Image (tube, rainbow, N blue to C red; front, top):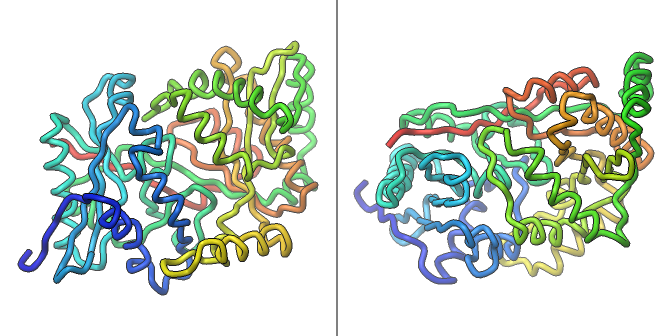
Length: 381
């Protein structure tokens, strides 16, 4: 490690260097989708991100001759540990040039930080939890990531496993040709889903943007209740859910956001997002380019040229008492039909825990194929 210095990010200048580093890692990579620098600033700012109301984190850079050659972050999430009854630390923002020695040093830095905080194992990568960007891509590299999904070089898997990290859980992403699904829908699926609708007296409606806050209130109630049994789950606070809703509101197409009502009560929801990584990839944010110019290119590709033919089935929840009754299939089918009407061609259903048998079966029944795998690793300290 001669000539290598790893230091904690201190101050706005350091944090901006930390945020900008991935452009070095992915220079020339045709699949990486750069983030907006303003969004990354907010995401990593303890004064602006509600994550830091129940967690704390430190970020680190590795430098050689003053130049950054790698980054990592480590997070102590009190809410996660209390809910899960564990003593875990998470790591993320793991980016490094092609240098196994530096990669190992960065991972050791996160491990040392976790020990100092009193944790007994490390999980990741994630920014910051299962409610955010999570998982290392280990299969399906020859494609851009869909909106809010991760991407990384192939070599990172070797760096982690070489450092003693083992699989904790795989997260699957499915692809579905929604036009083929709708046009060639097996009569059995149509019959069964209609039977479910009538049996439970269900009404499906879009999110009402003029009553957006009301529907966000329904989603708040449903989200934590429907996901709490899932591996790695951590409840979202009201502030986190409000913050997320505010950021996503400009992206939501109400026709792709379905609320399921039973006897007038909302008992489920499903939200698909247009894959805005497609126009963002074309706009290609980069340090030194004024962000308003990037946003003009982004909006031109999205709103004018309509260069979005994917959606991502991003969030789906059903109250626990109605699980296993086919509500999820009903919502997936409704979202597929809506996406075809809107001119979309493909849907990604992600991410799905590998051990979520009911949902995996429902997606397979609709013709979904696993085309990408994301992995969460763990290491005992």
